[in-house]
Amino acid sequence: MRAAQLIQPRTALQIANLADPDCPPDGVVLKVLACGICRSDWHLWAGHEPDVALPQIPGHEYCGVVREVGRDVTQWRAGDRVIAPFILACGTCPDCRAGHQTICATQIIPGFTAPGAFAEQVAVARADTNLTRLPEGMDPALAAALGCRVTTAWHALTGRAALRPGEWLAIWGAGGIGLAAALIGKALGARVVVADVVPEKLDHALSLGIDAAVMATGHDPVSEIREITGGGADLAVEALGVEITTINAMKSLRKLGRMVQVGMPAGDHVTMTLPWDVVYSGQLAIYGTRGMPAWRYPSLLSLIEGGTLDLTPMIARRVALSDVSAELAAFDGPAPPGVAVITDFSR
Ligand SMILES: [Zn+2]
Ligand SMILES: [Zn+2]
Image (cartoon, rainbow, N blue to C red; front, side, top):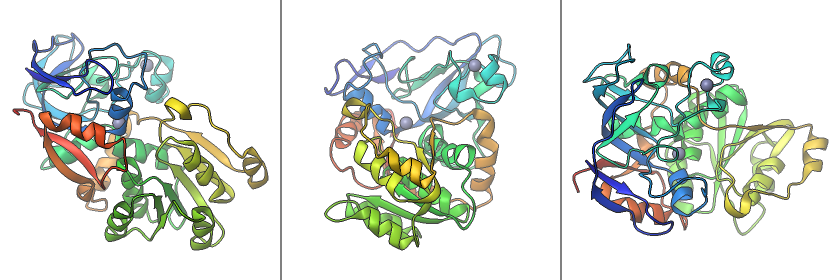
């Protein structure tokens, strides 16, 4: 199969013909239809994931067609079109049984702890626990984003911080996950303001019906958001994983507000200096979140299939496998609006 391998951080991925993946007894092998290029892939490319052994095939938000089925799999057959969360949970440990698959201690993460889907084929272990059928007629490029960015935003807002209709939602960082959170927030009846440093991203968000947009540089974006929201947001999402946006997100909340850390702090941002008096005096709640348990797919898919949530404007670029290195490098700077998805694995 053709696959793109990361050999060394910050170098172009090597595209090569590799052996087809072996099918795990409890898993499937998919023919990959589409795979998103996510900021977490950039973290791996940039060398922020020292625990990941290289070479590795990145790619953790994908959809595909089942081409091979392991002997222990009971629910899937060849030809099924499926999606999976980026965290492949075991399904049997106490945390999984309690519904908390995102903290499963033995989780497998394609693209990091197993070969990922920047390839014509990917092996997906633990298929019965983690796969979900792709809704009829859903564009594979859109479905791929349901592996990481959309599902992570969905779980952050509804599984963790309990966003309610009418609340003000402030989103710091309008990349793929921030844009997904903004569109989900609107679909759930919240009022949404986004902050970013890239004017094109703000214009894009406004064109999609987001209530307000704030430039996060050059002045005081926190005061601006506090003014727009009439005293502070009810819920703030940090969607970048850096110190300044985390500080701003905390400060943009009204009293009793909630903040969700959705962006992954990495590199210099693993340790942050934060205004903890804001948490005390504002009586704030701070949530961490990562991924979504597979059992929560139906709640999100019904919103999409029912037409309440249209995520198609998220997909900005459909690219080939050979475009991956350029797309990863683009995350170094202010990346353009929307997300890039690999849909052509032949070149
Ligand atoms: Zn991701
Ligand atoms: Zn488990």
